[in-house]
Length: 331
Image 1 (tube, rainbow, N blue to C red):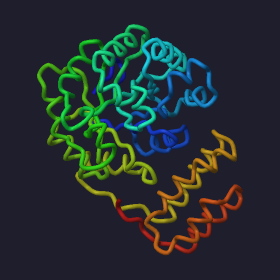
Image 2: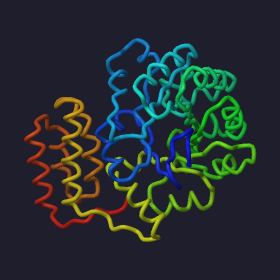
Image 3: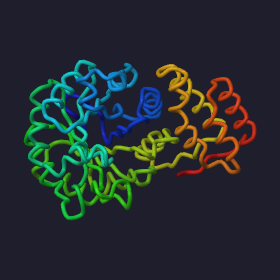
């Protein structure tokens, strides 16, 4: 599979852009486990053009993360064009447009999946961005705004016509948010539309190697994007790649391996974001890394309230000692 000149090989796996999750520390961990392409957290076009500190920090890219895409969102064409140009200066491999975020505060401004209520504006904005930058432009979106408006087949054709070089489709409508089952049949319909020549990447409910293989086999997608299932389980990329190549399922890691990984991730987080922010933003990851442990409430509370690096290291050592030999269960 290729996006522009970016060769991602056969059946590539993508780490989905996730706010407050896909920072440099987590992206690097997922790359080490075999993610073929990663994305930044989504970045507000307004924040970029105002040089807001939080938005500018999200442009930070390390060489080991490549290939990487910068994802932007917004509801105004001029602001999105300027944001795309600014993102291009950070030298990612591509620019991705977020037409899929279902969060209410973003949708009500007409951004994210709110753009699915105004398809002409979506197409006009995409066309303007494609013309404004030299990098490949891709789009991530949903099946439609609601059950009565699942118009992704038409949208895909129109986005392709204005020059995007790949399309990621989340198999839910905006109204579903993240509830219910993702509908991969419509993703497959887009992929098998003879008018579609660009790569189609499927997204939604892929939380095991078996489901990933099924998605490739049944729906013919070019690639698969994994989001929430990677949080606390970044080795899912290794699991899927191994199963696609060998047909064998890998055992889940032992607890001591998870502790080593959590410690490594924690150090990367503190290194890239500083002690205070690094500790705060690791809390969601700690919860996910150890969520299968029995009788873990007291230690979980300590992990979620500690504000000291040494104390967190001691807690990780205690977890390793108490649960030595424990093997994590598959989500």
